[in-house]
Structures are given as C-alpha cells and as structure tokens.
Image (cartoon, rainbow, N blue to C red; front, side):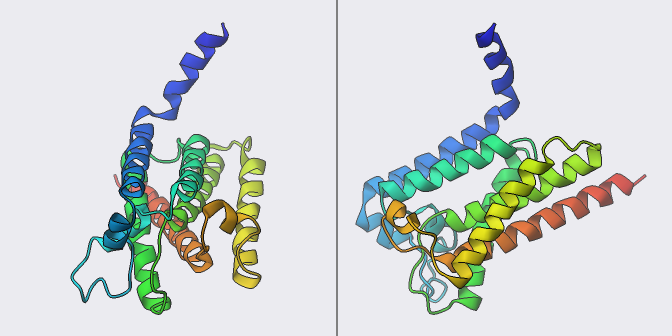
Length: 213
C-alpha cells in the first residue's frame, strides 16, 4: 500500500523538471571536475563584454568554487523544485533560470562593476525561490484555497530576513564555511528582485491571456 502511494505521488513532481535538475547539476559537476582551467574560462568577470567572452554572462552561474559549494547550491535547487514544482512547467523553470542568470549579470555590470568575479548559482536560487513563493501564493488565492499559505509566509519571511541580514550585517553565519569561500550577498538581492519581477510579469501575462475572447 505504501509503495503504491509513493508511485502515485512521484509523477506529480513532473519528470521533466527533474531532468532539468540533472542537467544543471551535471553541467556544474563537470565544470568543478575540470578544475581551475574551466573556472578561469567560465567564471563571470566584469570585462567579459570587452573581451567578447559573452558566454560568461550565463556560465559564471554554473561555475562553483568546489564540491561543497556545488553541493550546497544543488541541494537548494532540489528543495525549490520539490516544494514548488507545480507553479511552473519545465519550460517556465528553464526560462526563469536563464533569465535570472542574465539579469544578475546585468545587475553586476551596472550596480557592482568593481566586483572582480562571481561564481555559483545562489543568486539564481534566491530569485527562483522568490518567484516560486509569489506564484504559489497567487495560485492559492486564485483557487480559493488557503492550505499552503502559512508555509509560504514562513518561507517568505525567512527569505526576507536572510536578505536583510546580508544587506545590513553580512553573510549569514556558517554559509561561507559551507560554501568554502566568500558569499556574494549583493548577488542574492539582485536575484531575489529579479524573481519578484518574473513573478509579476508571469501573473500579468496570465491575466492578459485569460481576458482575451
């Protein structure tokens, strides 16, 4: 009986989303395995436009400082997919992931031009979580259900508290130790703002298409 329930529940997680997860984790793991040469080639650096190395606008987010950093970010990505797999399809998640990568890079170029490099998916993860939270709340309110609202509010409050802490105090304790390197707190804020913008645009497009005859 228990096995049957598990088999019925797992397809609801949308297999294509987990294919996306395996792809992202696989690419990031290959980059880590290739070591410093790959990191030097793929990491974000502010002069990438002048150097015509345009791939760095995205590849820097898939490049990590090492295995602990990668494991930390992939556990975050898996958690987001597990909790909020219903708010978007695989295509929507892919668009969100790539869009946040480009938006964070643009924010760095404009707002933090003196940052010499950036590595990791954490900014994108903050944006994905912010977008997923808002879309989940919107779906709950539109459907007239309130079952998950408390959970969303608690997670959202935790995200806001983390961003405020990082903006006023600095990196959250233990995060630098877990990542095995410095934490780019400003990137988390850029990503979260991008996630809010994505959620707002997604809802606006849904409402627009729903009103069409």
